Length: 407
Ligand code: MLT
Image (cartoon, rainbow, N blue to C red; front, side):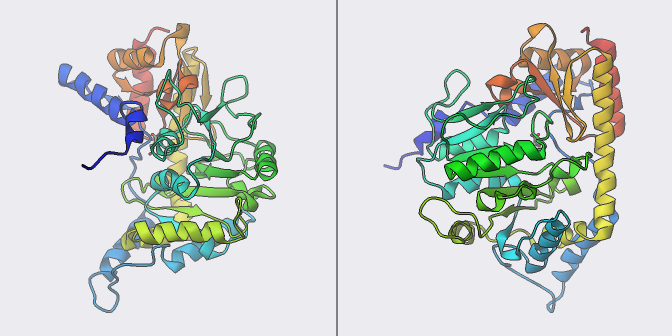
């Protein structure tokens, strides 16, 4: 008889964003005609920029003629796009070869798949609160016990609190793999060079691997903050970086991302280049490459014109962030993030739980947020608001919270 992967039964019952969608749907059924303003999931809303549309259209057009038609491409990605990404890194002062960059259909899948190349006995540390995919994927790969009292025994949690500015200290004990996300989802905090340098030093000392999620790097407005882990000396030896076109170019539905596995990265018992080739083996076996249309769009994003146009859309979302941040500050709420990141992390009032505050915002102001506790135990007592939305919707949401929610 077939059996199921029992690790799935260790997971918390449902995926956070699915839970929120269910509650929102119920509210809408019970309140027909009421318009709900969605500042929950970080889902882009603004149309793609003209040059990116042209790139995608070119991708479609190429499929229409026998001379330019392509079927399966390289599993690692179109060589032109890998080269363009290497050029993107060179603008940050980072030297990468195209074969260290693997194009994918988005950072979410990469962030879940990457730890499959490491042994099941690795000790994994995550930030708390944390993007749930890092945790759930490691549970599925068998690196923890069943969900108990808000945590997974076996995983190590690095506390992110208001006291440490939501950037954790390096672990006090030995761990093998550390997930870092900066700019952070959900707290909106951004690690400085020196904070990341501490993690790189830790990783080199412990022969640990950092899995650095830079999906929100284009939202950094302060030029002194690092946009890539490879801006830190020594990171090539110990870090994998994930990034995405989703939020920076509006590809949440188009699907395109990348993963950097430097040749210099080594783990116990491997020589230089071996981790890169194991990831290559994984990708060639389980992935047929990103859509050729999406990759043509990605090439357009990385042109000078594309970068300029996408920058305008990023600025639009960051103006939303400012509106939300300042609106909630005026109300007297304690708010974080939202300056170099598209997420605003809000402390609930009077020790209200995250889900209770979610209900207050939904019932009272018709605004959907994301309960902080859904990102981990230390997210309790917070909610996250996303700056991805139409401007009129964001203004209306802030106005409705101001008018209807008694703080
Ligand atoms: C979020 O809201 O945290 C993100 O949109 C989820 C994701 O990128 O998968």
